[in-house]
Image: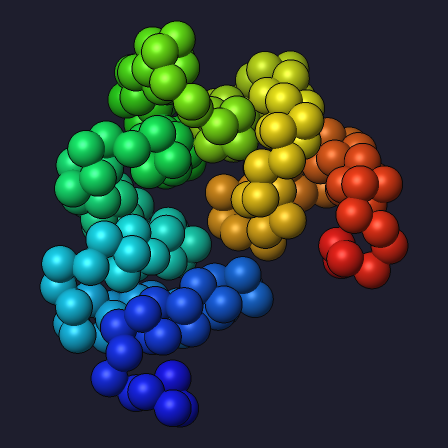
Length: 178
């Protein structure tokens, strides 16, 4: 951001870094700025949605993530994060419907196991989450290294996440995951 203060991308990435660092309010501020600079940027819109979810501003978070879903032709990653956000906000039936769409699409296209795993965890189905997280690890889902994101909140402190962290450490080596 210092080298290009007018870059929506740099601002959105700074917001994401703040979100990972558990600074949701700062993330929201930066992501709003990114959207102001580039109102049609799917990255900034989605980043704002995730930052708002991190700050538990659910209605607006769902609105922004839904916009990213629609503007991405319902890309599976965005759909999975929408399902997580719906579940986290108490909209269980909507989350299950979104997960149903993901499951139907998985029959004909690639859908990473990571986002449905996070949504199922939020819905309280830890067994399904465990199975899907194992699949995510097998497919080497890059999102697994971002365990500080709000979407991992239901897993923190649970044996499921600690087991996953140990398995990841075995894959990438000590010091890569903290």
